[in-house]
Amino acid sequence: MSDDLLERRDEWLKSYRPRLRIGEQGQVISVGDGIAWVAGLPTAAMDDLLDFDDGSRGLVFDLTGDLVGAILLQETADLTAGTAARLRDKPLGIAVGDALLGRIIDPLGNPLDRRGIPECNGWRRLEAASPAIVERDFVDAPLYTGSKVLDTLIPIGRGQRQLLVGDEGLGRSSLALDTVINQRGDSVQCVYVLIGQKRTAVVNTIEILRDYGALEYTTLVVAEASALPGLQHLAPFAGCSIAEYWMRKGMHTLVVYDDLSTHAKNYRQLSLLLRRPPGREAYPGDIFSVHARLLERATCLNPENGGGSMTALPIIETQQGEIAAYIPTNLISITDGQVYLDRELFAGGFRPAIDIGKSVSRIGGRAQHPAIKREAGRMKLDYLQFLELEMFTRFGAKLEASMEKAIRRGRILREILKQERLSPLPIEFQLAWMLAFNAGLLDAVHPDKVRTLLDKLQREVAACELTLDDKRDRWLGRVRGWLGVKEPV
Image 1 (cartoon, rainbow, N blue to C red):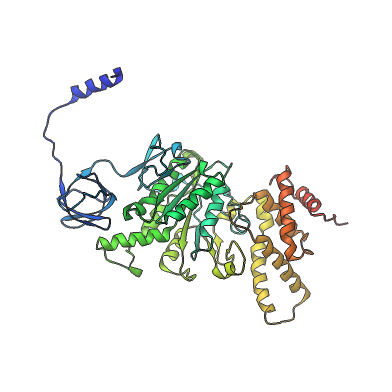
Image 2: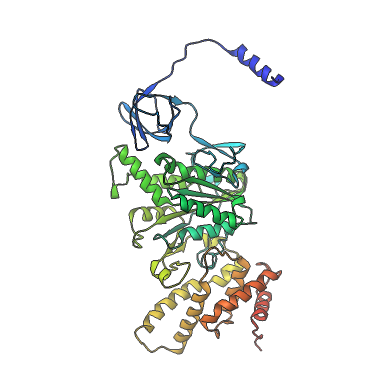
């Protein structure tokens, strides 16, 4: 036994005083569906932890006059009516630290990748207050996603909350994975939260991140579909706490919640089992505050508080493209913008199927690099006007020469914006293609040939030394040379 340990034992013995200790012991009345009702705990409060005699654990989630409703976080086969329950002094939290990078854990911090318990040096509560107003700063730095549409027309800044919304199977998760993959070498720690998904989807996500070398700077928090409902409810809060630790250390983080529709349904299930009164679409009345409490923790801190940031990409599912449903409208009102994916665009071969008209980024423009902002300028508005003009051509209307030119340029831009999944692009290439388009260097190109030219442009940009801070004329001269277009006389 070491000297230090002996000294501490001696001090403890000197300060020890025998006295009467009073504690509460409750008893399980009923258990089922991930819920336990406990009697005999009059001082229990919301979010208190419960330890059961069989080794199970629970979290106080509802209080009545004589009973405590708890969601189970760990459950053994021996948990039955009559099992004793006690309150635990310590609040619910998770171990945090750099040891979580590259790890796959559950919402309580237990490893799921058979690599032993992560040796973390920090601890944070799962339910914590969002940063105060005086700690926050303006969003003024871009978070590049690698997507042509997002980085140019719907930009995202570090510390922003941007919703990814659309029907199932339209590429919402692929956009989020693209963004995570694109953070490689950019000093952004990523947290990917998988809520209520099938094991095949979880394995697929892990394999993609591993194949693209993104797992080493990413932590996966997984509560799959077979996990207890209580764990699925806590998963996004665990991911937020992990990212918050790095943000408080002055680092930049990205957290993806995949997805909050499943989280809302899970919360509705728990609330109905706890006999709470249902509201609209049977969701409890506080579902809005649950998601607001989570997303308000994503922000950009000012330099006095470390200058770190947490960018949040919550994913939400719509049914038949109904963006005005209850949960989507809740999330739209909480976040700083949304990226809407449309089924008709997807079926028409435009991928990523982002509906540029229904997508918006309310604060991302402030974070764009001046060179990108200058070139993106009116591009979104011009593209939307092109879509309206194209509608007229379907009726065989005769068009003026200027309108025909606008339609021809719009069709070229549409071809440029198409992009395969899991292929994020550097921001320098985004600047190069915008320069080529705005200068009219692609006007004479048939839309079918655009992709070949862009591939050539991408290779040339990757090999050049220019940065976003170089002058426009220098960039334009290089782009002309790469595309084989002569300087105007």
